[in-house]
Length: 97
Image (cartoon, rainbow, N blue to C red):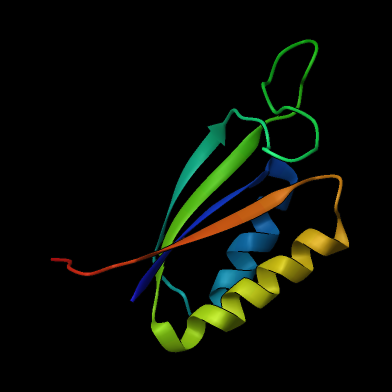
């Protein structure tokens, strides 16, 4: 099992939820509105007067056989709207209860 942390522009939220559902990834935790700035390029997401947009974040656990498919779909979503921003990071899940 793998954990995927997805950080994204809030405009992607519904599309990411739908993407996870279509990929049979039922469980996730959404962190709602988050603030941040990408490490490479893109606008900050601070929810302020100067930088009004906000981000979102989701943590989901994915079975190994679904990982590549989910990452490919997330990459395609990011590439379809490159100015919004979307990043996904994967960690192995070694234990759970």
